[in-house]
Image (cartoon, rainbow, N blue to C red; front, side):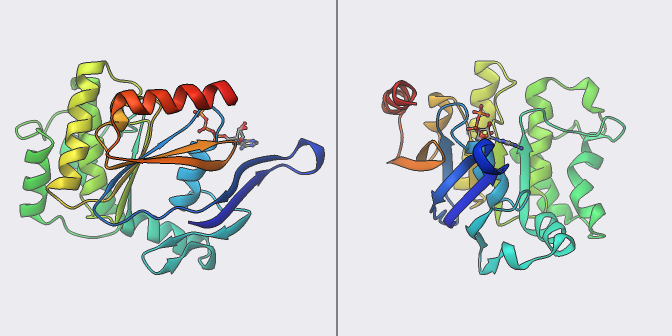
Length: 237
Ligand SMILES: Nc1ncnc2c1ncn2[C@@H]1O[C@H](COP(=O)(O)OP(=O)(O)OP(=O)(O)O)[C@@H](O)[C@H]1O
């Protein structure tokens, strides 16, 4: 992202949700986006993922400038090159686990690569559960399906918006370890919005937003140091 701004509304009621954000996400890394409530985390994620358009500035995925793409091309880019994981899992209840995982491929008329499918199903620990329905799974298992679905197209980047927000701490740890393995073992690039310092501790790099600006960054974050930065930011927010 280069000098990205996002303004909602106009005139005196305008809100500048992003204010000159510059951010490089190296391929094959795990990044946490953190900051107080209202600091612009979701807006950053949505602009980076082509779900929303910045007011100004540039978002590049690989060599592709997203601002140059119309809606149809942007939709295709998201489907081909980006994976999404949401707090609420967003599985389709009328599809089996396997059908949910392979849905992005079917939407694209692409066949599943059986070896790759087997590998990611094994990686997320769902072997033997492919014929089940989402309603038969725990929250943690549902999020594993969502992660497999995000990985199945081998996207250039996976964006995860509070992926552990609806999970108990133990299950959250499992899901974070899984995202970590996707980066370490499968060389996936993952960008995760989170409030949780413990979640950030699984990443390679944490960036901190306040009032729409990146105000700090931390390599190899640990939960205590992240908590300190967050406390300071909340105090000054
Ligand atoms: N669609 C919108 N219309 C108007 N203002 C918006 C809109 N979306 C976000 N905002 C404002 O932009 C700012 C940043 O919001 P954003 O949701 O990105 O923050 P956040 O850091 O993700 O917050 P949280 O941690 O509470 O989810 C906030 O002031 C918010 O009220």
